[in-house]
Length: 266
Image (cartoon, rainbow, N blue to C red; front, side, top):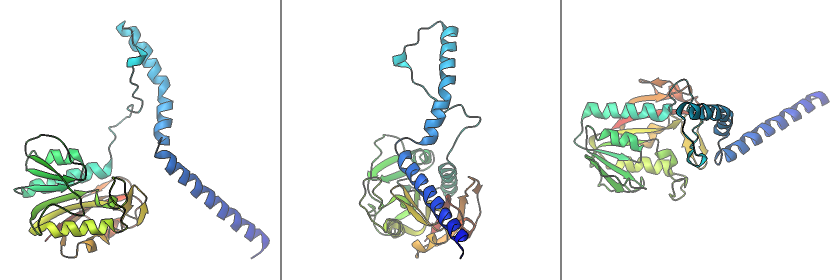
């Protein structure tokens, strides 16, 4: 290799290292002050101040600065939404509604999804942090995905959406465990009754651990976490945020940040 080629390789390596360092710093800073939110807010302040001044003129009211509550990120042309959570919640609710179980158990999924299910099925919600609400068709119990409060093969209808990827990372004050997702899957499998349905989702794509936020799993490897169960259906959201109702897990294998929705049965 000549001197020029060696220099080019060295500069390329330095540039790659600098890029990695920059994005690493971004990740740590974002935990405190997400840069996109900060930039959007700063750009929106002039409009906020113009609107405030104009509103004061229109209303004749005296606006007290102490009472101001600037909302600076809602001037969007369309309603923003998170594709993973929005599509997975709708998918699972539709699946459960179609089967009308006598009772449904959810472990740690989104509160809005769980409360919505109560419109058509009694729900038992299990979480490390119990949901202290009083509502018809709803029961909350303290519990952990590694030790569910049910006997073997007793739960007819069960969901765990965008949860298992967090287990063992300490994000929710749970003990650190490098095999948290696998153990969580084993516990879900343990309690699922014969003929029962499990609705399960995790981020899928390039396998990795983004400590302490989540893990991303190879979509083709997830069914192997449930050796006693049968994969009945698979849907998901790709990197572009597009929902696909019928897929093979391999279709999302090359993604960076996709989400796989699995329906298993025993």
